[in-house]
Image (cartoon, rainbow, N blue to C red; front, side):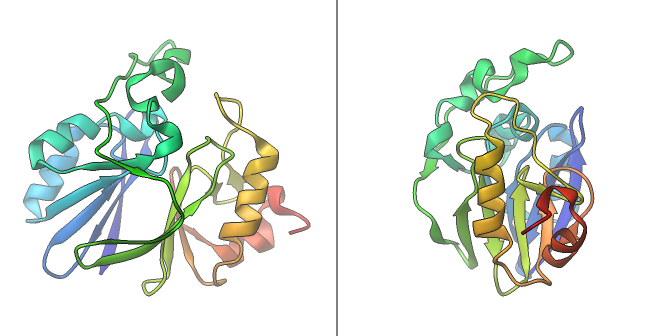
Length: 211
């Protein structure tokens, strides 16, 4: 199994493609530029199975409908953000003057519980990591040694908490209780910026001093 980072959209949100040797793949957070993503998938002969969202902010969902329709695949999001896809006041797109309000069709499946999630031959654990948004989740691939953390934890930083439903105290608790308990060498695949590791963030992230 391998993964690829693909920055997409107006603020270059990281979309991740996780693929198996049989060319089946999972798509995480297709934030924009659907044609670019579609071209990549077709050019590599990949067969998407689902779209998995770490959360439903506008910059993570912009290409959801086009990718879903092109490949006829379902969309997963946390139950707490069930209404966010279709509501610009919740997904944040109405607060930015240079962004067109984004409305996406409802998700097909809602994540309600933490724990194992199996899709075809893909196995991962879902952790509820709220704080950046109420329904933020992280997807941990234990055997492969990486976690897709959305906008919870970045290289040298943490997610913003000034949008609807944000809470910095809650976010720091999520990071401490869920992400920092992962093995030190776990790769952190963040929603923006470079890939890092749990060890690097514990050693040098200024927001995590004292953890």
